[in-house]
Amino acid sequence: MAPPLDAAAEILLKDLAPQVLGAVIRRFGDFAVSDDAVQEALIAAAAQWPRDGLPEKPRAWLIQVASRRIADHLRAESARRGREAIVVSLVPPEEQLALAADEESAQRRDDALDLLFMCCHPVLSTSSAIALTLRAVGGLTTFEIAKAFLVPEATMAQRISRAKQSIKASGVPFEMPLAEERGARLEAVMHVLYLIFSEGYTATSGPELHRSELSGEALRLTRMLHRLIPDESEVAGLLALMLLTDARRAARTGPSGELIPLDHQDRSLWDRAAIEEGVALISATLPRGSIGPYQLQAAIAAVHDEAPSADDTDWAQILGLYGLLRRISDNPMVTLNHAIALAMVHGPAAGIERLDALADDPRMKGHHRLDAVRAHLLERAGDREGAIAHYRRAADRTASTSERNYLITQAARLSEA
Image (cartoon, rainbow, N blue to C red; front, side):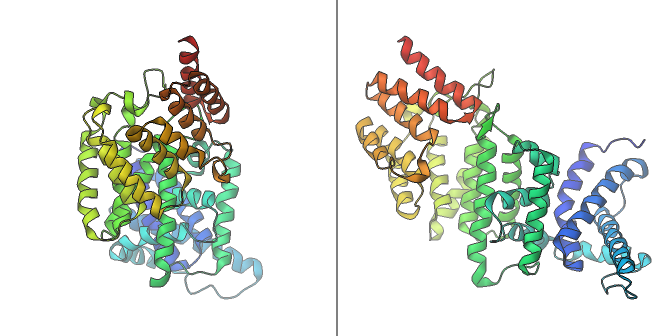
């Protein structure tokens, strides 16, 4: 039995996977078939490289193996259907390595970018786009993606397969969208990356507050996107937002995994290097001109991160930024956070009044955060019984064990007071 891959080789395979997939799709023009072939090539590498050593050109090696898998598939299909000719894409094995080597200098940067945009195809649902992005660009296995989203591997495999077939059926070629389409597709790309990060930073369900494999992957992919299109201000804003938010991760949970809210966190545990990088990025981005929601959220995160303590937070500045954000974003979560900022500046009654505006919003119906924020503001206003009731209601409505335990603890604390 061959020894397992070392950590460096595993990282190399993950980095090469989207490059190889992009090159193979560009040659053969079929997303589903190319993805299957690349997965087989990655499995072959994991088995052979520890035994035979790392090839001189790992990327070319993977392209060659994937191309042979597709060639075998097409030969079998041709024989089954009684065809006499093989498609032009089939290349004799002795020529494949030379062609694969040529790919070493061809469109490496575009491969990853094309994949991001293809995975966020408008025909796909958000959940399918996230799964396909993690598989094709992130290099995660179907098992890893299924585990992250708490579904059986077979269910996730079907979701990914349907997504690939939907892309094929759409008839859209594997290439960057036209200039007039790129803006809308870029928005979808950023939204998917934001959702992946958010799910990793605060899991919607399960025993753990964090799913660091997801938030880390979203950060890695957003860095890649920023390198590829550095002049896009909202991409820079999204990267800054992730950095400034993820910087607090180590302080968000206690020794037993319990949730620690922002105003009680040990700020010495915050990642100062990530904060400095995020602040520098958003400081350079904001003066460029047009300001979007990711930039404003990053600016808010920067105000929090630069405050030496919770009491020193510049809530007036945060309130102003949320006011701007509400003007350009029809998002109930923005209104929810705006209510908190209002309460911190003008008192809890002002915040509660703003919350009332969300009561009839169908997007917030049954959402635990609405009750959790109301409970917090009622507590600040001195309404202990009201706060207890809403803490308990919020606990009943969340599927996150960490959040539920925190909310139950808050209700119990007030009951014992």
